[in-house]
Image 1: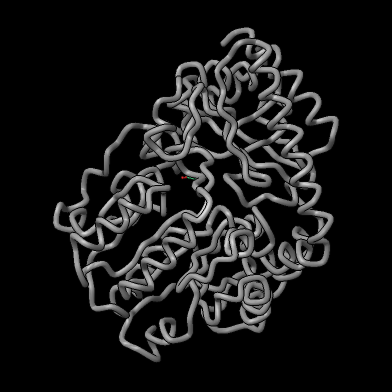
Image 2 (image 1 turned 135 degrees about the horizontal axis):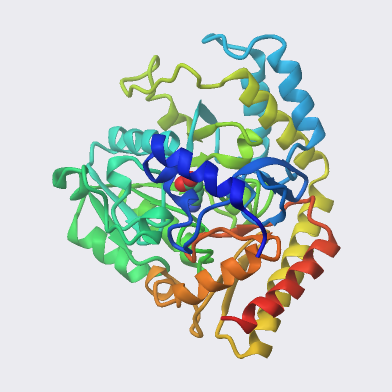
Amino acid sequence: MSNRVRSQTLQERAERYFPGGVNSPVRAFRAVGGAPPFIDRAEGAYLYDADGNRYIDYFGSWGPMILGHAFPPVVEAIQRAARKSSSFGASTASEADLAERIASCYPAIEKMRFVSSGTEATMSAIRLARAATGRKIVVKFEGCYHGHADGLLVKAGSGVATFGIPGSAGVPEEIAHLTLALPYNDLAAVEAAFAAHPDAIAAIILEPVVGNAGCIPPAAGYLAGLRKITANHGALLIVDEVMTGFRVALGGACELYSLDPDLVTLGKIVGGGLPVGVFGGKRRFMDLLAPLGPVYQAGTLSGNPLAMAAGLATLGYLQEHAAEIYARLEAASSALAEGVAGEASRAGVALATNRVGAMWTWFFTAAPVANYGDAAKSDTAAFGRFHHAMLDQGIWLPPSQFEAAFLSTAHTDADITATIAAARKAFAGC
Ligand code: HOZ
């Protein structure tokens, strides 16, 4: 076991100031036990903790770091922008520069707004859908997580699933009742919901590839089916690509599955590691926003120049090298995910591997995982033992069974080989 004495001391200090010692619950390692290492710095595919231990990073700040940490073009772009000041509260050309890049990857996004987090993006998209339709009910799917806005925590994934919280205290029932949570990958359940609530459903919001219940791909025809049902019933389809945007393909799941939604939400990669969220889509909906229309939404730091610079440098690099980057991410992720799955099988450990491009989850269950109910059958204690056995060998996986792992362009073949070798040892103790 590596020495993490300094991290332990820092955690104890943090607990004096922050609930659980953290500023976001999933960082607390409660699901896997033990104290989380405290980060000192990171470079490429490696995290270095306060005790000087090095880890191969497979959670990538929960998704954004597709080009690896401290990627020089991103660092330089932030430095250049910072020299001109870090915020103006007024428009800059960099906002439209980044918007142009996003629109060129996402044909469905005709107009957009920048915000500072994925939560703000999904919350604003829902408000827009309600205003556009004059309806109140929103359909989401069990295990999908769309940030921590009141109406979206019902049967949510990520930390809500990790800690077994069915919704959240503090969310009024009247608000929770406006959210219908249905099983993912089940079109019949969606049809039934529309039949039961005629002319009352404003929108369906979903992760097109679920990442927040662990990685769960859409069944063949599922996304097209949702597009058809929403169009038939006059409801909006909101595709939450905060996690999948620029990750599963340059144009995200919309490109990968040829999907044309009404609204899209983005975050993580689009900000190059700085706080950025985006909601955008069809002009007829986006023009309902103030100052053109009656839907209010605002933010002092929205379109922040440092965040725009980081996003531009990241998307610019991804666009310029898209063919080689996404081919490499696919090949390397496949080698890693399958390599570890092979070790599990040789060790007699039941493992279901779900992967779409450079995001995946190893579920500790023998049965296939097609929705949250399946994911919840995983042996989370075995996952916790595996997680710690990997961490002790310098491999940092997301600290919950209900999260996706991510690969970056900085991960080398040697990193992958070392990770598979570490898994071989770890499975021996599961
Ligand atoms: N969507 C991320 C995890 N699934 C958010 C990370 C966080 O909650 O801190």
